[in-house]
Image (cartoon, rainbow, N blue to C red; front, top):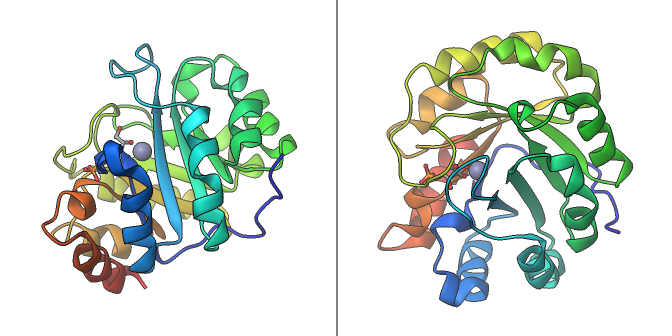
Length: 226
Ligand code: DX5
Ligand code: ZN
């Protein structure tokens, strides 16, 4: 089991490995960590909750030493049905943060409790088509709320503009110490309004790994949210 991290890093960009070169995963991680990245966002998809199948706990285990030896944390976004059945495996593999979708389980409160019991920070994800009020029944047992600003399943989509107002509403609903993470369509064009709305951890996939110079792209985005 992982040692729990004390605090979720904020005011930074979490590169999403979904847009990295999977044939050179370690090098891609080293590249962004050399540029200052501390949070690696891992998108886990099961082919049921969302159509694509991506990666599982095996890959988290494979990157854990690389990420942690450099002081980084692993942020696992589980786009899977019945996530409570996966929590233990991801925690053992080295996840520091685990976020789950309320639509994926009839037992969201229990599932979030399971994440904390496994020694990880727990987050609930709010989909673009779901009411922000979904957070209310679990507000006191979460460390993070992930606002997903595209429909889950794919990188490189356009930011859904109504997400900005949803971040602001969630910020006013949640205790100050609950981190608001934003995921989807984060770029130099959208990051300022997202930050101003109250988000404090920013996932970026294609805007980092899709750039000609991922290190420069990371630094330019990170400077906007520091
Ligand atoms: C989408 C994933 C995102 C994705 C974001 O289902 O949750 O983490 O990698 O990609 P970009 O930053 O390209 O929108
Ligand atoms: Zn994600």
